[in-house]
Length: 340
Image (cartoon, rainbow, N blue to C red; front, side, top):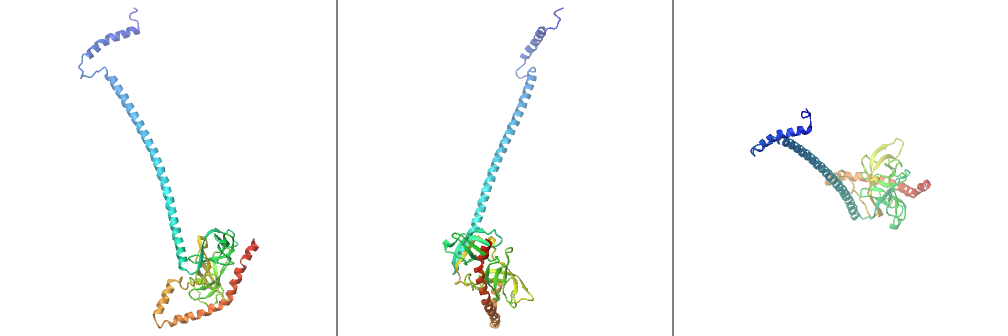
């Protein structure tokens, strides 16, 4: 009765007894034949190995891709840094090229003129709206004094009104207290160039007789009567002309040929009365007309008759405006002192 009771030892012994014949039969099989007993274990091991290999390959590929992304990011950052550095160098080279061309133009202008010039650099601009001025890096130590003209290669800029030891304040021609002796280049009509107001960068040509021929686009140059600016140097271009009913003078508005807020280097005229630019800055159309007229003998009398009346306006304002600018620049520092 107890023999048939469930016992684990008995069950194991029975399994061993039954498995021995099967094992003996399997051992008698040929080597090339597959072991059917080990086949399930082989399949299970192969599946586990394949799964582990696939997992390890995936991890390895993901890690390699991550490392590649890190390297690509570092390489991209290096390329970006190199590109920014090269871009900065390119901009610096372009700035140096522009500065070189500008300085070469200044040197050429200084070598070709008869004037005695001193080069200076703009180091400051006046923030006070009462005056339009700039500051240059030359002063009394360099021999500068009040009243000396300040120009650029393109035209008149202003004149020194307050020199210090190492710097000087330049009053721009757009200032309402600035005056410059001017002539309309085409017709030789004489007048005085003055700034309109402290809120505007435009000019006006005053004391021009009503009968004078002044047109929009005419070039106004220095007259040279004050012996400060060289004769025939560009000052402004006529912007508009108006004939008032009850006025003996024309109302002529001008715009300066030089933008005072874009100037970086200037020339201070130490001696300018030996220079006469004449028609050097005349428009090409006017020069061509003069050359064409000079080719024929018959038309030659016409320009002579045209130029002859120009002597009258040139002589007429010579007395009146000559006294006017002489008084105004002398009084220029006074409004500055009152406002201080």
